[in-house]
Every structure is written in C-alpha cells, then in structure tokens.
Length: 106
Image (cartoon, rainbow, N blue to C red):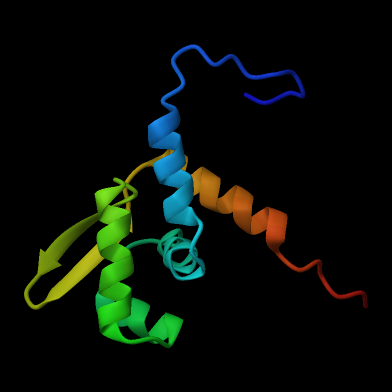
C-alpha cells in the first residue's frame, strides 16, 4: 500500500508491472477495460461502445489477453470478455477517478 513512504522493492516483478502498465497505456485498451468494469461484454458490444472497427477491438483484446488482464468465453457465435483479476478492476477504477472530469457546478 502506498502511504507516502517508498515502497519496498523486494519481490517486485518489474517486468510484469511494466507489461501491465504498457497494456493500459493505450486509449483504446483503457476504454475497453473501463467498459468491462461493468461486467462481461461481447466483441460486438465493445465495437459499438467504442465506435471502432471489429478488427481494432480484436487487436486490443488480444493484447489484453496476452498480458492476462482479460478472460473470455464463447457463447455460440459470440465471444464475451471480462476483467480477469480484481486488481485490474481496482487499477482501472483508480485511473478513471484520477482522470475523470470534475462534476459541473450547479
């Protein structure tokens, strides 16, 4: 837990952490994770939510799968993706809170 003191580096898997952060460092992948934070979504749903081509969504999902950030299940023709680990969900929520526009003044 970060409390202002330097974090201990013993046991830090820096290469894994860097891969995780690189996966988050693309707007499209970050938005996919934000949409998945509400629960599983199909590739078609993500395509519509992101207003982008299926090929681009699939490319981003492949990277997120490679990094272990998402899991998937097949239902008939549809493939549904979900966030793989609660730690990913917490990180996405933190990033969203950090960069969300403040509420408009009444």
